[in-house]
Image (tube, rainbow, N blue to C red):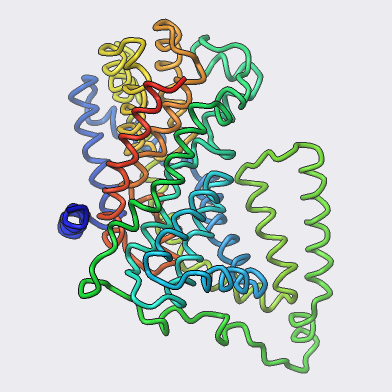
Length: 452
């Protein structure tokens, strides 16, 4: 029965889900028309909101591209690949492989989303080499399924913003929160850890149950997964001074040591406070050290950069969508994102408010696939409304966070780094991810309403 459901979801997605870029274009047109109809703005007003937001995520675009490039480069170092290979060899059957990659990626994404996306996809590739008979599409989908927990973890944008003191917190929440909220009430709260723990334990079994029967399995030829472990990066040493510099470890060790000193300094002064900049910085300089020579590192960077085109192309379109979502009618102050959030507030009570906050965040996430952007859109509306209904600020904030992560399962943008590493398209994995969306949605909704 379960396999029939997943098979049907895969078929639907294969037939109807467009390329991620076309998905962004379609969402752009939907928001354009929806904004005009709901907020009584002219087409030119919406186009101006769109163009005004189009370049607002350039820094984030670069960070996202570097997550893929630096993470892939680090994971392609001999020591990391040997570790992934040893871990993959522990799995003897396809079902064990599916469960292992789901568990590993979920834990890794909870620690840091960028780290989890890259490690999960690379571990899945290694499993595809080692385990015969495993469905490659489901393997990558399982690696991506761990991404659903990232906003509840150590790199979650919302809980980290709630924990940050300053005038910005009061301004972002429309005065509802003045004092910072400790992560002990959000990330490490009982209700959040129970939801995370339940998904961590059960999602591997959900993905395992979706594995196709042997006659329907789609494997990948292991020869297509050969990379620098099998010859890439083998250097022919020249006799010129430039060749000797490129193939000498001296410069790599010097600049790598310089980066390592700062990394140690950062964590000594900030504790285990992760953000995209320090994650990318760590991946970059540890990768330089582990590749040993500049030539090997540059070859690895070149190979890793091939998967960044989707990120570079699509993020400006999503920034434009976000501009239209928050663009207000100058006479009424109405915005499309505000109307969506206020609509859910209007039908909520103290018990159902976390549920409807979660659902509204899931809808907004389709159009604003950025944790910081989601917070900017919803916090001024949802946080004061939650306080008025008697719902704790921590619960409201985490409901936004879980909703933001939840619909990433069928929002192809966030899958781009994993797809780039796996050499697959969004349609190949999103049918399986749709099942994960439905299952996890029930777990998260029940947890937000009835725990704590």
